[in-house]
Length: 205
Image (cartoon, rainbow, N blue to C red; front, top):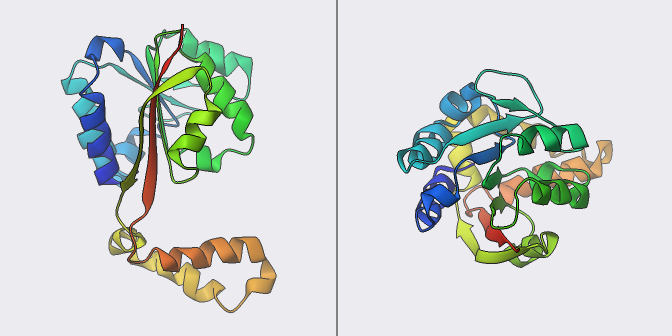
């Protein structure tokens, strides 16, 4: 998650009644260190911003770790039920869909987490907002937008050694073309801003 993304989410969610969003399940939350140290704007901008508006946030991740409230994997019913047991009125899923192997299955599980009238908030680099909406037919879209975020250079300023991956992989596409192509694509985004799709929907009755 980028800082500009976190600020935009707080802005968008401020337009909705806080009591309709609380409690909110944060899917793929990562540990407290991930949110506060590695990507501090997640905690100090997004999570603290939501809490300031009276929204309780439940951090959900398939791993154990400090700052994870519910250990649950959405690939099985037990994980879905463990989250539903906390009665979330809203589900937040940021920058997760692009890493999921079974996209349709994962989205179906996400849709089961809230009852009719509940909210779903999704951000992802791919696909476009309209394509995200198509993955959640039970939800009426309230927000469909593309947000410009920081470029790859933003990450390199924090961890400049990452560019070594692209430099070392550049001469060797034959060792794995798919990974090589993905790695080289980051050079395009070195100064061009990433574009983040944002979807917010409400589950139909």
